Length: 244
Image 1 (tube, one colour):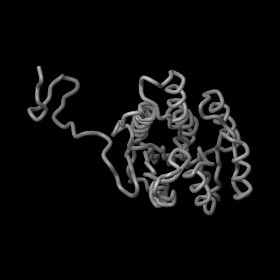
Image 2 (cartoon, helix red, strand yellow; image 1 turned 180 degrees about the vertical axis):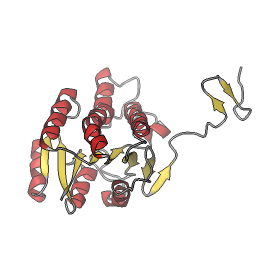
Image 3 (spheres, helix red, strand yellow; image 1 turned 135 degrees about the horizontal axis):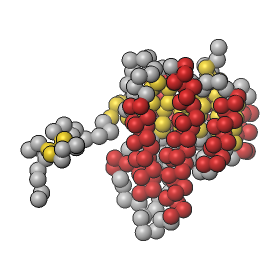
Image 4 (cartoon, one colour; image 1 turned 60 degrees about the vertical axis):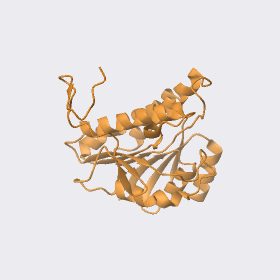
């Protein structure tokens, strides 16, 4: 039986590369915002199924989730790849631009996870890859909306992974690295370089990691080492200098 994999942002650099690669062994459910580009993708890969959705609209995402749940009993593999980047200083950024970044980069993956996780729990199997970035760990000047939205996605992902520790459901973060895409057309690497990491995460066995961050074949730490901090009692060991 062909395995179903949902891929958002399917017409972008990473998304289209991933769809071409996965179509060999999976039934790809490709989600994109632009009908013309979805048609072009379908012409190139007639075996895939395409869905047009504005991931910046929660109503649109909810309709997509309802449609997918009615068509497919269980979607065991999900790649939340779609993303937007609005390079703007905090002073120049509008409220709408911040909300739009959060909607596409964090809220849409949240709604999709909510939609697919009940069946994953019922079947005791699921693999979710949420595409993130090193941005929220670096917080480069001029990219506050992107960093904030990916930071929110990171927190949602790790929390969801911890909530499903008793199931064979793996929910991880992956940064594709500095690859060419619509957001980074001049980047130095071809999107193909991230395919081995996708392979690894989609094919994790039941003992594999969950709630972790992967980048170009490496696992990177998401959080600082805070051993010695007792959050509930408001104390910290001597390695954390007191300032007051």
